[in-house]
Image 1 (cartoon, rainbow over the protein chains, first blue to last red):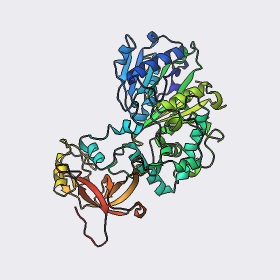
Image 2: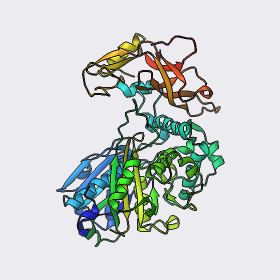
Image 3: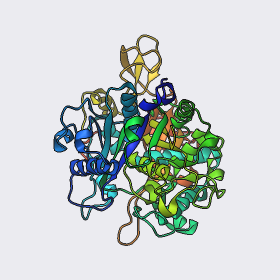
Image 4: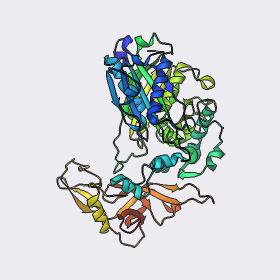
Amino acid sequence: MTGPRDVPASRRPVICGLGLTELGKVYGPAAAQFAADAVRLAAADAGLALADIDGLLVSSGVTNGVHLDLQLDLGLRDLALLSEMQAYGSTAGAMVQVASMAVQSGMASTIACVWADAPLHPGRSGAAAYGAAAAERPGWPGLAAAAGITSANHRYAMAAHRHMERYGTTSEQLGAIAVAQRDWAVLNPLAQLRTPITIEDYLASRWVAEPFRLLDCCLVSNGGAAVIVTSADRAAGLRPPPVYVRGWAQAHPGHSGRRFDDFGLVSGAATAGPAALRMAGVDLADIDVVELYDCYTYTVLVTLEDYGFCAKGEGGPFAASGVLGPDGKLKVNTGGGQLSAYYLWGMTPLSEAVIQARGQAGHRQVPDHDLVLVSGNGGVLDHHSTLVLATAG
Amino acid sequence: MTRDAATAEFLDATAAGQFPLRHCQTCGALSAPQAAQCETCSSTALDWRPASGHATLVSWTVAHTKPDPSGETRRTILAIAQLAEGPWWWSRIIDADPADLRVGTPLRITFQRPGPRREAIPVFTRERVGEPGGG
């Protein structure tokens, strides 16, 4: 692969802008409005005019509300790159990868990557927002729904339960992840849930789909997020500290749920992680900050294993060893993640990664933040993206 | 659910009390009902063969509804099972106590209709020792 180390220093891709709209129970704007706001905020953050943008990659959440006409909403003329992308929770990372390749090749110079969603409405729960889509589907998905499998909660719960049966992973070990991330969220003014929790609170939270309790599951948020990717030479004249995109990879295992021995036990992180680190020319031990896609506590556990922070099957004891949380030695999901901060699919780990790499994370800032590993995960461990971000090219 | 072109033949079979698998006319392998090509050799020359109805448990979850005002939840056991012929199937387990379930617990496919004139949905039940398998 032709990575950033293989191109002239001036052409190396850099994230130069980050835009986050108001997040959470924010009612009124449609997803496309959140998306336009996020791009405007990212451009302002970078010190760029909208007219400087010559590439736009857009993606939607569950309400599927962000499309190519975002170009027109933003008044962007003569784009050299425009596309809608969809690989579920791995899309944010995938958009940054495509943008980075476009910058390296010279195809486009300044590319906005945006995601937005607005599933929440007053008086309707997040579960209802997500469940509504499943209820009366035709064909094979409708057959699963008619049998009672109506939610990602169910599918991920079966993945996590398989891990527990195979390796002896426990509820308390999953709970350690929820508690550690809440401890980070307490320090994050952007987080929706900032009251500390204990393992007893976790164990007392209601069942959703065993082994998952409420506190194993992500939030649901309205909002939008955007990043702008440009070249190192262009970023040098801009205000924000540059965040280099040093390595990347994807993995899509292709387990159909029909006959696949590893379903639930391993994710695409197992192959994409090492590939991205290789492109960046760094080792796992060099990583300072880790921002993992966390639709559930279990997603964090399996991704830690697959990246190699611990051996396969040892994610439970590892997570419960005290290594996580603000006082732990491994800095994981430092903003509270999707469990406690905000749920913007892959933009949640990516946005916190940019904030940490820039050194702008305030009370939750990790002192050493030169290398940040970012995961995205979509489907039921079906789609994976990894990014290695760095403060130096 | 509503049937579509992809599920029509499958649902005709479940209405008759059979669980059909895709059978490859090229290599003879059996694939899951959803397969549009043979999972072994990629051939699209497929017809249907009834499964034995025997399966073993791969993983499961006890799904809870949101508590009602009295705090009660409805519980459903949802599962992945491996059919005796190899393919997996995802459905609920009726009439089982979650405490009795283990990886590898023998199950059997049966059918439930959610209402009159509704499609027959394949579901799992515990395989009782000494009882012949359905199918």
